[in-house]
Image 1 (cartoon, rainbow, N blue to C red):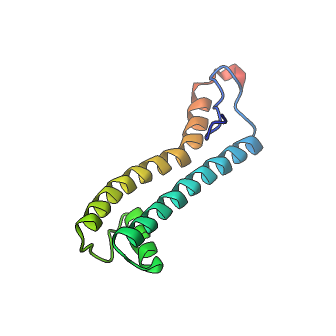
Image 2: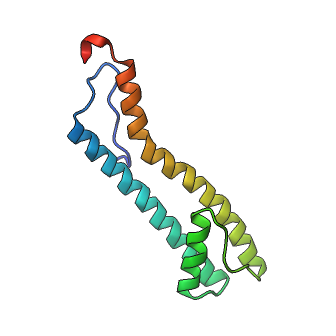
Amino acid sequence: MKRLLPDFEHRSQPVISLHQFIVRLAHSGIVALTLIAVSLFIGMVGYHIIEGLGWIDAFLNASMLLGGMGPVNTPVTFGGKLFAGLYALYCGLVVIIVAGVILAPMAHRVLHRFHMESGDR
């Protein structure tokens, strides 16, 4: 099974080229966008089925929660309230994970350059 994120080079290996780094950044961006799209879809389906919202309203509520703003339409059913709370907790984790996926290649490159011996540059 292929890994979602690429392997990073070891500290004994040279820093990858700028082109490879840009490819790695693009790959991380695609993984992050995919995670956001899947999370948005989960929220839309949940709001549509559980709370009975139309697709546009479900999109609005899911995207607002995923963006950290909070729901637009207050849930009225018990299931809707439960879903909104659990989805809000899930969205908080998604934001942290997406930030990590996007920042990991940059942080690794900076730390890799920092830890390299001066003769390897």
